[in-house]
Image (cartoon, rainbow, N blue to C red):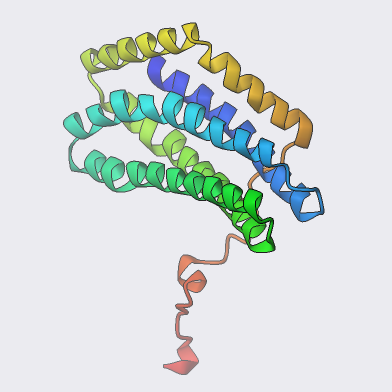
Length: 214
């Protein structure tokens, strides 16, 4: 399916970008003077590539077809899962912009903390979101859509890609991604490396009673 192949390739680019975001945050924690301009590049990439270029195709061409044609499971998955997470990513980027504006006016530690929290929060949410799309959302669409729906989505995505390519969108933001990666390096998301034996119940403070306590 051409459209999901394009979206998976964009996921790979976004993973590279998020690795640079984490690396930059870590360097600031280690004492690097906070580079306001580079954090503004993060905002630009997030809004214009991750959101408009990528999420825009999902929301306008893929997700609406899933909701219309694949029943209650797709409706719940998209409307109560993927779209909620898209908005959460947008909220993190809005918070990042607000914190940067405050920091430029008054470089207090709390504003620096808010900058790092928003940037790292964005990276964590989007990393997990993309992993779900790769493993659940796209496979559901690929195995469930009729040929007619696949062709319709693919034509829409091809037209969108042609237009933004002529405008230089992909080249501009991938160059920005490479610049940040080359400048700060990359750090992978660490959450999946945590102890797998820690359950969600334990994480939320709910522990099973032992037999001796019964």
